[in-house]
Figure (cartoon, rainbow, N blue to C red):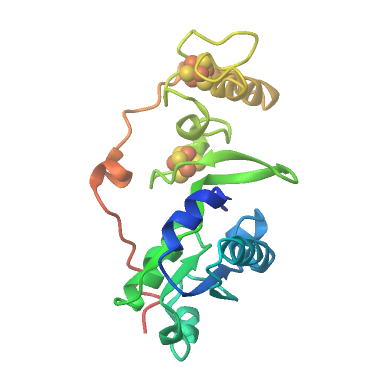
Length: 222
Ligand code: SF4
Ligand code: SF4
């Protein structure tokens, strides 16, 4: 899932301080799972903003809502009959949701309340780590199910760089060396012979290198 973290309150205040009526809009999708932008976080942030602006002697109308998803038009449309009652929207969705909301309500200022960070997993509550960089052509079959693009700091595709120390990455020693993980995984699978087979040069046109991407599923279109 997409992982995000809430922006610092001072940064949020700076974005919305000129607007008297603000709607704080959460998303019940990924950002709820990582506890960055769901209804709970909407309520906490809205309360903090109300308190701040009241203490400044500039009380504002700050209302709360959360949509099932902000990356789907059908849910964004649910704001249609109330959005004109606000001067700005503070979206706690990921960057996709913020942009899609702004696409739909073109004259309404929309601001991001979270920093969208990566596609990752929950190691434990409050600890998330990156697993995928959405390269568009998955090569996990060649690497024992460990992604060298997301989990090797240098995106090495044919073995380690040689800089790891005690199994940790030389770029970020807090993280395991991705290629150490690949080695251990292939060893556990009895597939170390895979190291004899070079991975062919990757076609990066399916990644961000090919520009803005789009998927068209004719079988799903109506
Ligand atoms: S190979 Fe590409 S699609 Fe597969 S996990 Fe890695 S970044 Fe994601
Ligand atoms: S130490 Fe490992 S994870 Fe870090 S850059 Fe080198 S090969 Fe990649």
